Image (cartoon, rainbow, N blue to C red; front, side):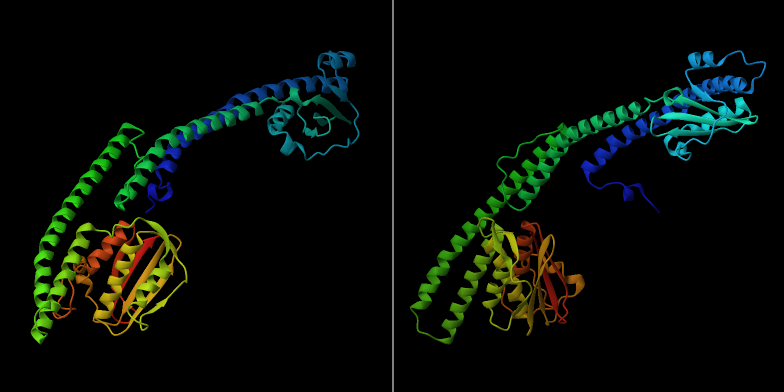
Amino acid sequence: MLRLRDITPRGLYARSMLMVIAPVVLILSLMSWYYYDSHIAEVNRKLGQSIARDASLVQAYCDRRQDSVLDRRTIDERLDMTFTCDSDAANIDRSSHVSVFSYSGTLDDELETRLGVPVETALDPRDSMLHLRFPSGPRTVEIIVERKRVLTVNSHFFIVWVILFSLFMVMLAIGFLNQQVRSILRLSKAARAFGRGRDVPDFRPSGANEVREAARAVIDMKNRLTAFAEQRTAMLAGVSHDLRTPLTRLKLALAMMDETDDIKAARADLDDMSMMLDEYLTFARGEEGDDPIDFDLAELVRDAAAGFGPHVIVAGPEQIMVNGRRLAIKRAVTNLISNAIKFATDTQITLVDGPHAADIHVDDNGPGIAAELREDAFRPFMRLDEARTQNTPGTGLGLTLARDTARAHGGDLRLSDSPLGGLRASLRLPH
């Protein structure tokens, strides 16, 4: 079933322009149709009747009928037309009247009704004179009359004014809509920047009252989220600091003891606890703290893969330029590769440079994750025991941090089936 929204523009600017232009075009079209179908047609019909009446006087004169009350001189002076009672074939393009003389049908009807004989009309393009030829007894009468006596010659001025008025209305509409839509686009750009963790210091609410209210709501939401993130970061930073102190004392105490298997295991446990504290603090911050820059994503991925050994193959373009926080993206890519290596024996990375975004596909041949559990894998501290072993190290924050990083840059992270038989993690980052 065809719906109106399927054939109308999707953008606000285009829809607003359509709402303004469509009524203007419709009204002006109706006015033009009425003007030409009613007024101009009636005027030309009256002019045709006048020409037909004068032609009947010429016909009477050429036939030398008794009802001919005018002589040749009087016809030339009063009727303002030139005629020949016994005409030969004039060198005139007889087919031109169809395209040049648009109301020739009306004139032909009036002439044939008045004269009672078929009349041939043609407009001479050399001097814009109209030639009328019709039989009159044994003779062929030809009348030459100025075109302006047959039809209105200034009707095209109406079309010119209609076009100028339409252009004026469209220019006014474009100016008005630009002012209104610019505020919405500015709000959209600021909201997108706020969503990516970037500040827009020069953003101010502008435009219509409704747009201003929406802008104030976005600014208030951004301030609340920033305050919440700062409070969470400060809290976990304090917890991390408080826990690091006893951990440091324990490490110093173990360093002074004799090297035994138990001491080695204790040191490993302390290292794991330190790593977990770092992961928790990173999760609380939600970013690495570096500023967004333009960098080569392909080079970054290859550097990250090189840290895991030559068996991790990277395929794709040699260069993909993106803008973002380089350290945060590198950490996300490292987390994805690390997850793949933990649970598989074969890991491959594929880079895809699309028209609007770059994709990083990390494939493995491991056990994978069931489709119904893939969304749970992104939950913080979640461990999927069905697909992961209890002895596998980690905090359960790798996928969570990776997706948070992707979404903070306007992209996303998705899990799907891998061509290798395991899991595919697809990280998308916009250009």
